[in-house]
Image 1 (spheres, chains in turn cyan, yellow):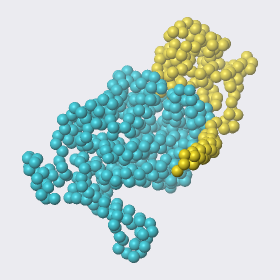
Image 2 (cartoon, each protein chain N blue to C red; image 1 turned 60 degrees about the horizontal axis):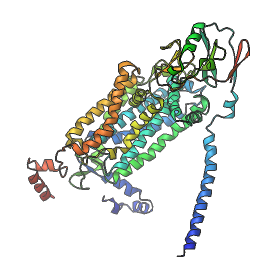
Image 3 (cartoon, chains in turn orange, purple; image 1 turned 180 degrees about the horizontal axis):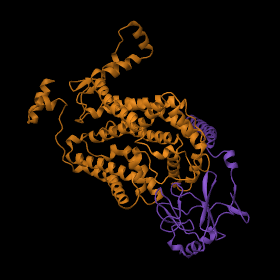
Image 4 (cartoon, rainbow over the protein chains, first blue to last red; image 1 turned 60 degrees about the vertical axis):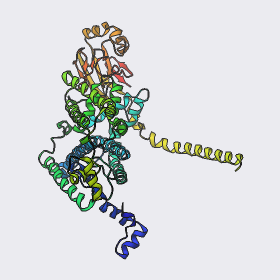
Length: 420
Length: 169
């Protein structure tokens, strides 16, 4: 990193920067050497930042009209939809924005899994990412409760009841979470408070996430350590900024499609019925982005073990850097891992599908097999693969395969070192 | 440096930390306890229900503490079925005699003990209740027979105030 000796050109800039080195930070961010072979899967970090800011801005404006009270919440949401100027637009952006946020985060996570971005020295970036993901799920869940529809109410009831599985203190914890003997007004007001808070916690963690990223620098599709700056890198601005910007535009087209043409397709019709504690909807399902974990919960016939399995499925990701024993990062050079990776992707999609179906018959059987495989992947396949797999030769630099151009690796490496 | 001096410092350090921790806990507790049910929620502890219109084989659902309560006037068939069940066949063994003191009347929280949904009447494999959320089956005594729920539906404290009124809570 060449930015520590940065000096602003103007006198005023120098005066300011000597007192608060914000310009040094800005210079670091623009010059930041980035691997030149980053593909479009790497643009989702920027897209996720956009999603977070979108949620915060639309959330703030919605909060100006929303009323967090069990008697008025449902009506205030309808008031936003019908009376408030552009209220429908802001709410549809916020509601679909949550789905877009999760879409992007799943791509971001699976990119890490494919290219081994969670491995040393990037474990802390990964763990902060998992905490952000957990907070996102908490924020999304609580946000879904706020309109106080039937799905809001019963989703809140089911999820808070997960804590009642804890032996001895479970019931007490649930009563404490509710502030009563059922989900009711005290629950709604605290959920609103926390829903408002969490995005700012996420924002803080995003800063740490990027800070931790800028210490070792980006991983890349080849998955090797590179010299920075070198002919393997390009400055973040303008190269990555333009690429991220183009990807963001494509993403916004998808986003806009949902907002303007199918704003309710990802939601449930039941949530346009006001919450009724006397009647449970016939078929309770969470939002699509939580379905795989819901399928895991339901596939275990025991209440406590079901909850434990569901939480483990998420928390197991945090120890992934130590479960994957392979020294090679990128799946490009791991022929066996590459296949297991795609099986895992299919496994998670299958879990998501059966999570939306009734928990009976064939669906239940499929859910159980897929749940077992999910844990098998992380607890058995990944640790063993590191020892058994015959990996392909990894290039010394990003430029080598191109500049070398020879099937004779030794010759190519010679040539490489001469160029340097 | 003498031994004695180090020990004195250690003591001060430990004592300060301990007092600080007690002080912090004393401040944190009100912040945690404020989330527990408040006085106005606790005040709604009991409710009286007129059950004179209920005929055998029917269920009345009333709201108590924000939760539905099933009041079932059972038919002789249902009572016989519930009382004939062997204790070994139950996941959460409870005698029907203990759950329904007056066999004709079954009063219980209409809340599935799995994750809190409201089970449906006259459904499921045991002619009792069936929870649509995650598939728990309850018998005519509200006892869990099949599915992920760990316990029978809870029987709240209740009493007959007179021949046609039940007081719950």
